[in-house]
Amino acid sequence: MRYLVFATVFLLVMGGINYYIYRRFLSKISTFFRPYAAIIPAILMLGELFFLIDAVTNFIPDSPALYLLLSAFIGISFILFVMALVYDLIITASSHVPLDQERRRFIKIIFDITMLIAAISYVLRGLSQGLKAPVINTVQVKVKDFPAEAYSIVQLTDVHVGRTIRRDYIEDLVARTNALNPDMVVITGDLIDLPVEKIRDDLAPLGSLQAPAYFVLGNHEYFHGPHDAIAIVLELGIRPLLNESLKVDLPGGQFELVGITDLVGERMGVLAHDLDAAFSRTDEKLPSIVLAHQPKTINLIDGQRCDLMISGHTHGGQIFPFGYLVIMDQPYLAGLHRHNDSSQIFVSRGTGFWGPPLRVLAPSEISLIQLAPA
Image 1 (cartoon, rainbow, N blue to C red):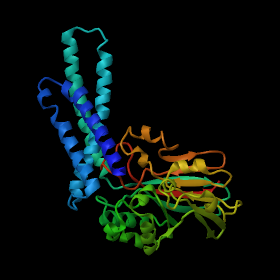
Image 2 (image 1 turned 120 degrees about the horizontal axis):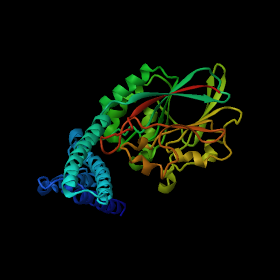
Image 3 (image 1 turned 90 degrees about the vertical axis):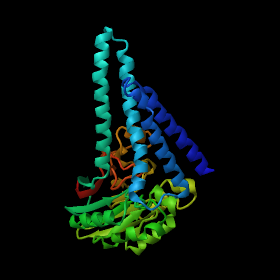
Image 4 (image 1 turned 30 degrees about the vertical axis):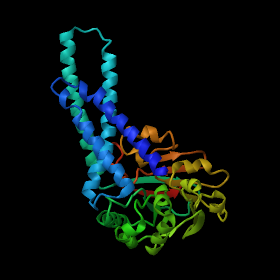
């Protein structure tokens, strides 16, 4: 039933988007282009249909290139929908401007050409950024009572190891992480995007992380077996934090590292988040670094010390302006924010991508968080 509801909603949404692209954008570009206007949305819709069928049946051969192509259709539809919306609004508004027909016709030709070039550039930029290696994003954070003058944490999040992100990507990720020589590595969820038995070899390079590494569950681990995800990270020498804390010893003192399971666990009835358990053994006198996949988890912290929460999940919106929809659900989209007088939160744009291999104004990142006393 869940798959049926998902399939119905997906087809209705993508069908509506592609029809709008055709009806309000491509069919209005020019009389020459009009007979061919339906070809692009039809191809996109066909690719999205195959993508949906594969999501249920896994009928597509194990080909990252083919999967990238089909998933890219979803992102391209979204990009063209944005362009169609802008085009529609401008054309509608301009129809009320008093101009003679000859001048109006000339301006529309120039405008149509400009919009076509903009749409193509938008798609190409999205593809180039989506397939690009993650950048190093260095963030400096001051934490009250922190017991070291300099301490670095590398955050990896939303890697989505699966159909397209494979072993070579993880090998490069691990090599670049080790080159940063961090004091700690944290993986804040959505590491896996397929059942573990299918990607065991792809995950193996994570066992070569040189710094102590910790892991919290993201929503995608719940979709593919959270207990299997926990088992594989343990095999790789990475410690999962499941609504629990530990004290990290430094020459100048200690700090608390707290891990909270993902909020989706409550809905799925397995490994639900439990803040009371997570903070039950913490010392309020010690600074507290909290790991939680979804940024909105910070709204649930009440009375516990949380100097810095480290999160992911949002992908920074991944494809602008999709981020405006994301922040309807999450309080923060990306970057470092002061949540209140005693708490800060850092939200990564993600180290991989999910679905369409496109990113616009939201490049993937390896986050290097440098901590120092406030």
